[in-house]
Image 1 (cartoon, rainbow, N blue to C red):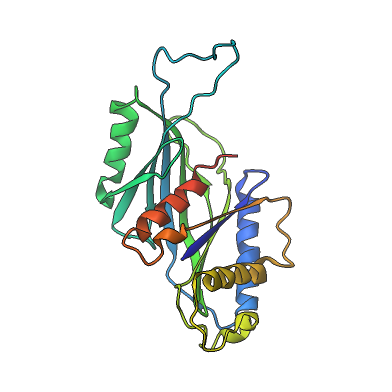
Image 2 (image 1 turned 180 degrees about the horizontal axis):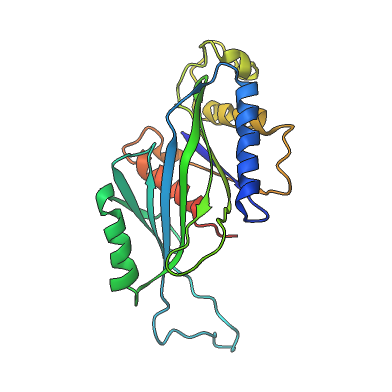
Amino acid sequence: MDRLYFVSNPSTSLDPSLSIVNTLVQSLENTFPTAARQSPWSLQYRAFRDTIPPGTPSTDAEGKPTQYAHTLQHLFHLSSLEPNRAFICIQPPSGTGTVSAIPLSQQDAHASLVRHQFAALWQPRHVLALQQGASYTAGICTVQIGELRAIREGPQSGGIQSPGVLICISTIVGADNSDENTDTLNSLDDGDEEVDFEYAQEIIRDCWRQIKDGQDLGKSEIKQVMMDSEYVDDIDEKDAAVRMWCEVLRLRG
């Protein structure tokens, strides 16, 4: 089970995001001294929005402006989820998004197809990337931290911008919190009782509290999204993870 936190960058320049990452990594290492550093992780993300069909009225019967409900297309790759595959998530205005997978080698070709051949149907929104993110195993939690970078395509120029920092904390529902790192999560010691979903959520929340408490994150706002509990330990768990990540990466207000 995963929970994803997004710490916004009030200024959008890169340095504040790097500072937040360094602060959180240092706090994690101090809070969990036996945490083991894992291989770096990365992600790539593109968002497309459907175009408004010709003839769609812009006002209602009373002449008041109406807002068109858009469908989004997410193109997403997360190295720690599936290193050799990318995911396409079609997200309607309401309801659950539909997820499909393609080989990672076809990711750029698909993006080019949508952007150029289907330009009448889909408008590009934004492109994000995260490279060399930090990853740690702390007890029964895995913690991933990294700064998002906005990618500018075409003739645009300017400094590197970062919308914020991503933190993903995951654990396994039913895991046993009884290894050598349990001293850092002793407030959650539940004896020999089976760890259920609610307990797994509390483990993640407590891990995050211990990392962020007392840390100066400036004027950043924190958004959090949790994987749908319906799909935990289910064959659709990866799809649920994709929808969780895309919900945050769409960067809506």
